[in-house]
Length: 203
Image (cartoon, rainbow, N blue to C red; front, side, top):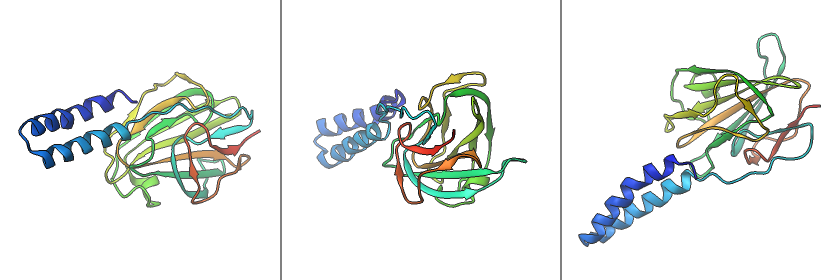
């Protein structure tokens, strides 16, 4: 459980208790359901990353929306976009082991996270990760409901494969950019698990 979850769930839980003491049963029931949903949303299950030495893991839970051939500067590569619904785990993880080279916050719009333009125009954190195989980039992208992006890492921090790096509250999108030599092994529509599903192989 992400610690913030207890804070957000505490208010509706206390109000639910008060409502039940006043015999406002239906109000108390709704508030208890809300508190339970908040705790469910902030869940943080343990994940075991694969032992495959060439594996690039998914940075998030969700459904693969797009696999696009997209350059990054002068480098050709792939962008894989993952949509997180409110039912998915929202903790984001490092797709490869390495060192955080830069965390770049970009203000922007709040289009629905399943729309392609969200990758370019929505508010986001762009995380540049230096690895033994080369640099990659992944983005925490806000959606129309998600308005709070948390990154728990700073420039210079080392990260392990599948390590927690942050979260986005209440529906969002995570993109990862990989160079052209990486072999993408997921497909559009596939549901992936952050930190454990192999997204690509890069040897």
